[in-house]
Length: 437
Image 1 (cartoon, rainbow, N blue to C red):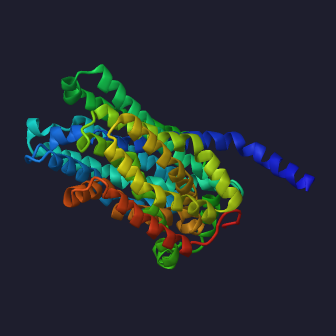
Image 2: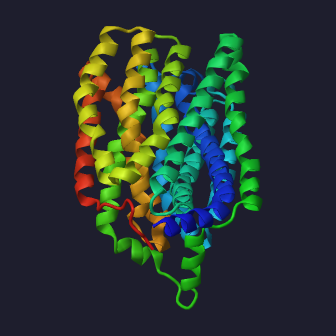
Image 3: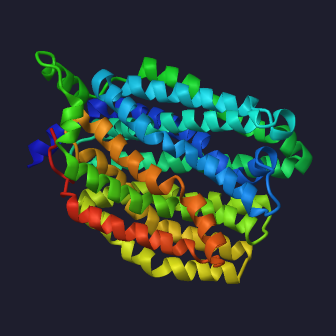
């Protein structure tokens, strides 16, 4: 046993520096991509004023702004399929470079977009194009980068490696929130509406140089190289392989629904709810988004290691009953006590069990599929689940409030999503600690 452990350590000591460099580069790329994609949500009320000043009801511009936020998710399944297939054929590194460049172009379009007052409907149209482009890019990014992280790990550390996906997403949102808060404090409201928001989107253009770093410094994963070598005599029909895994795709979609709906309601909708419904200032809602990122930043690595130890299915399951029990009382508390301290405490506490179910959720998705369709299979399952329910979670939540007249109505949306996740969990096999290829 001692000799085996020593051999394992010696083999991994040779690759550890490269793996650490890969994790750092992938995390930076992920952080920038999710910064680009989700910072719009933090500026949804501002974008509503500048690009969608329609109707007398103040909820209408916000709902239109949130609907445009959701349009980015419409393209995610297409991006997940096409870029995922490209990642499985040409390599994870090439696909990551492509998604980073597409995201940088989307950020450039946001930065240059004229407002409704400046160019009429041309401004909102350009914003929608930028959202669609970013949605296409993120659709391929999530499966590619998570697969790359997983394939750098061994069978006993895949959950830990994949936890850096959740960490990096939260890091991008956290930094975006800090920038929005900082500029809101430094600039006058007029300056923020005039050019401050453009500066926030311009930061996302930095995804381009990160792409070039990945091109020159990261190696392709060994799993993809081995798969590519095996496929040389007879090319793999990846679409046929995807069709041969309907149970895995269904399980993945349902698991994603149960994770993404709570994410977008708790970490994003509640911030806009505080501004648009409870009348809190912009910076208060942004602080809620920032505080909601703290548990993933602090606990993702532990959640990943825990799933490596106890298994993916147990790790995904145990936080779900907690969320079911507390989500409706949480909305009651916020709506009956519209204070910043209450809002921040609620989103922080809700994000703790959410973190412990998201991390193993992301780890199990690429593990469901063979290496030949790993990136495309995960991307497709993830993006369908997000596009159907998660991406429009904020729009649906605002609509439920408008239709029912109850500010607590979004809690039932989360409740239904978690029930679907439990069905997906029954369909998914245990994958932790097993050799996949």
